[in-house]
Each structure stands twice: as structure tokens, then as C-alpha cells.
Length: 386
Image (tube, rainbow, N blue to C red):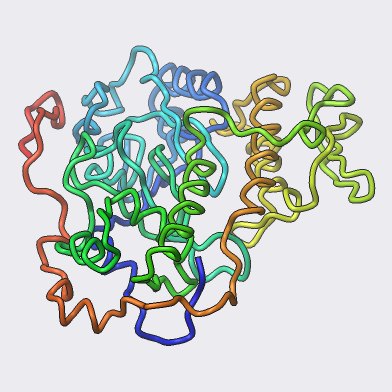
């Protein structure tokens, strides 16, 4: 929604006060674009012994084969030290690895330097994770995903503080204040939709007391959220604009190029069209999204490392994912906010929120919920208390 020129828009950090630092893997091999490679990597790790297992694991100061850590919340993985680990690979889970790049992860606490258990505790079908990506010359200010985000370096702000979509991560009293200003109920998902379309690169979020402006922003934000989450009905471009494979993709494409005149994407001799220029030009994290996505699936891992274990041929699933990504980027380009739009009418400023008692946010609102149901297994099978 429209930006503002004044400096009194409230900060995202005050509107959604609880945030968590991003997950830090510490090693690349526990994540991959396909789940089968992860299972093969795990098998190679547990079959290796002594120094060979240690070299494959790639130890850091935070994690070695001797590290004693508990299970990730909700993930029934082993808790013995990796030095003695055996058995099948924990079932990989889908994650948002980088902007617009969904991959698979082995959800084992022993493999991850900083797993952020507080994020895993609130990850469920109701949750939406908002990921900061400010400071870039181009691309979205915020991302939103239903998957656990591994995107770095921005902080992660869950929409809900507890599982089941309960206790919104919103400044206490803010929803009630906006409800009074706008004259109709405002929910946490409404606020999130507005934030996605109104947030500025400095991570301030102009709010409005104008009902029509609010309704337009929320409607556009809901569309952005649907495209970012990609859940429910799959997005489609209108007939005649939908991308299709026009020439079969080779078993292992190595190059990617775009023909702007023909609006076609070439993977070696393979060809996909039509691909709108807006999809090809879409950037995040300072790079074209389609180029980054392709590079992650064709990069050769260093020989002798687990990252070198990858598909022998391009999986059909990647082609389907690429077609959907092209569609999402093209549709997002149509609805994402344009910078430099007119001033937001009837602004709800930070000063107004201070006068209403919404700000400053209580310290407890910046901390995770202290009591959660369920048991978590600690190191070596011990019961973890939370």
C-alpha cells in the first residue's frame, strides 16, 4: 500500500514484537532441492566410520560428532551422539531455504548449528513466518511463508506466538485500537496483509485510519500472502500467458538464458515459454530469482563431500516447480507495492500509538510464550523440560 514521506510511521519491530534470529545450518549438506539426495547423504554419513565420518559431517565449534543435543520440537529423531548414530534418515521436511526457493531439510538438531527451537515449537498449518529482507536495492521488503524459513540474514517474526493459530504476535492493544479507528474488526491476518503491502525498506510500516485505503491495502496484501505461501489452489496465469515446456529439457542442463524478444527461457536446448519479462527480472537478495533457483540445482558439490551427492538427472518435479515459480513471480510483479506512491491518508502514527498506550510494547511481548504443551526428548533420550 502507499508509502509515506514522514518519519513517524511505527516500526515493524513494534507491531510484531517477538522475533527470532534466522536458523543457521553451519554446513550445506543437510539441505537440498530434493529429498532423495538427503537420504543418500545420511546413509553415506552413517556408513562411514572414524575420521571419515567426521570429515563428511564437517564439524564446527557449535556441532561435532560428540555434541549432545535434544530433539527438535515435534521431530522424533535420534538423540544419541552422531558418533554412534545409525539407522534410516529422519524424514526430510520442506523449508524456505532462500527467497522463493523451497528445498528439503533433514530435521535433526545434531546437524544444525543454530536450529532456533522456538520457531519449530510454533510451526504448524496455522503459522505464517514473516522474514525481513530489507536493505536490498530491489526485491520485496518482506517475505512470508508457511514453511520453516532458513532465509538469512533478516529476523523471523511468527504471526502467532503459540501453536494452533493462538495468541497473535501483535503489540497488545493494537488490533483494538485499529478496530476503533477503522470502525470494523481488525484481525491479525488483516494486519499481516497490510504489513506485507505497506512495509518500507527501513522496516517502518505506515498505518491508516481511512477505511477505504485500509480495505484496498488488505485486499492486495492477501493476494501477496497467497502467492508467497503458495498453499491451497495453485496460482495460474490467464490462458495464453501460462508457461509450458516447448522443447524437452535435457537430462542435466548446465546453462540458463532468457530471450526477451521471444519471452522464452532456455535450459541448454530445452525451452519454456511464455515467460514474462517481469518474472525473469524479478530480484531478491540482490540477484535474479530464476537464476539463483537454477544455479542451486545445477551447482556441482565438491568431490568427496556430501554436497556432491545429488540427482544423476534433472527430476521432473523440478520442472513443475520451475513452471510454478515463473507463474508466482509474474503474478507478484503485478500486485507487489510500488515505491514512491502517495502519502497514506489519515495516518496512525507512532506518536498516536504512544498516546493510546499501545506503545511502548511490554518486554514480555518480545519474548516467546513461556509455557507450551508437549514433551521434548533431550540428549541421550533424557526428558527435556520447557
